[in-house]
Image 1 (tube, rainbow, N blue to C red):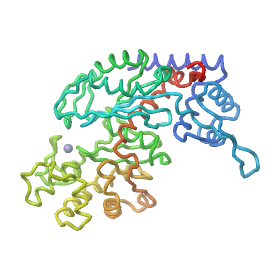
Image 2 (cartoon, protein in one colour; image 1 turned 90 degrees about the vertical axis):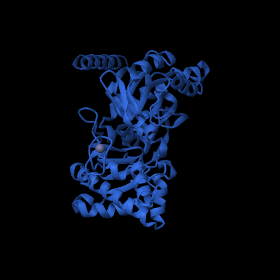
Image 3 (cartoon, rainbow, N blue to C red; image 1 turned 30 degrees about the vertical axis):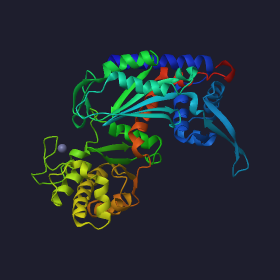
Image 4 (cartoon, rainbow, N blue to C red; image 1 turned 30 degrees about the horizontal axis):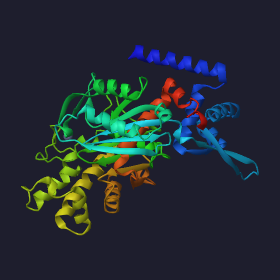
Length: 426
Ligand SMILES: [Zn+2]
């Protein structure tokens, strides 16, 4: 770890020296300016200075460099209140591309540009317990790469992967909800993707909750909030946390395991983790369905007979059993969230996946319960909203991961900023 870090630091210093001596531009300035433009897409010179803290001369050098290379385009100027014109810059979204994979019950693939737009999208169902066929995964990426021109394929910088479950030190994936144990994911994928795209393709992997939080920071509603909570439900419950502008990952990359916070003393609520009374046992989508079928005397029906979203709909329509189920779920969510709110003082709570669908019904109830559990000073002004990113949240998050890590790595940042070929040379 230390040797790797030292090597990376040396590489960064070397890249910064190279840029400094030849172009009077520090790689740190490039990174700071691109971070702002990738998030805002368009920004005035003043906005960039405010967000980066760069002085006018440093910003001028950086903007000149990026404009000359075609990474940033000047799009005009605005009249300011003081009567001076403010220059406006636009990110060239096609200056770099990223591949993304959401490794869940469906394998979802995407190609994103530098502004986070999904340029291509494809998906592949995965049977429970079935190890995915690596050749089919490669075909998924090949389909996306075919939508690019050859000179654009050379600008594919990195692949970001969002996964549920845990990766061990050898890159093997264990995902209980997918029925996978010790699947040798990283080693196989690494080699094959590099031969498919390019030997210097970088590959980054993060748990789905961290990726989803990055998507909200880059493209969603957490953009303007330094402290936020993202809570989402599908097969389990995921939670992304952002503190002081940075998503929290944890010592072992396990921060945000809110689904296994104990919210009930009922010994009959068995969780797949081995404990009892975890939040997942009352509020995950499968738990909502199971509880509803049990209350309505349909215990023996297959869980697929009804979906969690249908149970929320029934509750909204006045169905007593559905209301009991949703009440218990919201109580558990409020209890678990109340502890997190006291710890990190968020400005916004974002609900995603199956929690986003019934927002009009869920959010007022959740807020009412939270107001009984949280200090008024911490609840004052807090926003509770549904994510706008829809089912692509984690996929976009995987792209956001690839972008963020690429901006941090000098050799990848240099690739993003390399000259975009003029049209005639394509
Ligand atoms: Zn649990």
